[in-house]
Image (tube, rainbow, N blue to C red; front, side, top):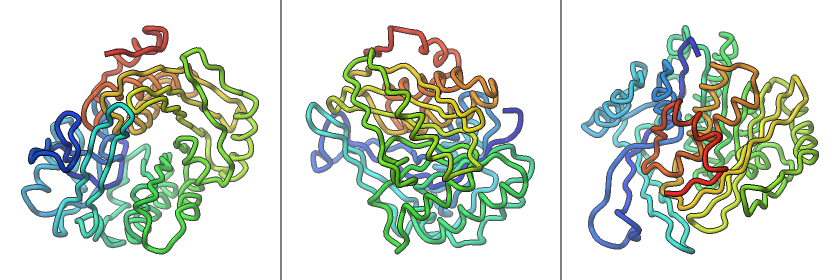
Length: 348
């Protein structure tokens, strides 16, 4: 994209156990930073985009460290609000054999959790931007975080920005009284581009998802079923131009089959990507964020070449599975090369 992209959400301290240790084993943790919208911002910066990240972090050494981390990747943080008591955190335990990965959030009473509606001047923040990206995670954190997100998307629409949202349903975060589906549905109605996996699309739309049962890279999706699904979904969100779905079948904790679908509502046409057979999974965190960032970048570069944009986004998402940490650090050349490499199988 030629103009600035703005993302909004909570950046957290990520504390991971080394190797495949459980949270209760040993005393050491590896520290880094992550968070869905921050991951999107970093990935976009790595792809050469002009990107700004908006959040609230404490006036402390940890808040400074989080912002320094983003600046190191070239992310603009000039409109981040300072205040609150602490930086949110999450604890991560890697998957091993039949044991799934584990995430434990520690976000309550963080600086972002205590964000109040009106603290961010969206008119000033969004001036000169081309696209605003947010996610359902932010709407789940607190009522005020949800209201602030809705203020942002309304301001973005009034200013003519494209609005991108990732449904990003996290059931354990919703706890302030509103139903997740009602909020996520409202967020999606403002959006030009909607992202989500098959389960998240079901939450936002109420439409039962189509099972993705791939066991190899040669799997063929039921195009007719997905076309019918998205045609129904498009009636719910008439403003949306691009509906994007990542689909995954987890054969084992470190063996996943991954693909993607894109429905162009103006064309009334479905696009499907190839299936990636990925083993072993090095780190599953941020895989969806890598997909989102790569798609936004591709859309700005290649426009309505829908198949090319989808293939690029899925390739980035597949590569992220091989990179430790929250961020996808793959560049455009590597992502493009991966689109046609190894017959869809990634091994390390």
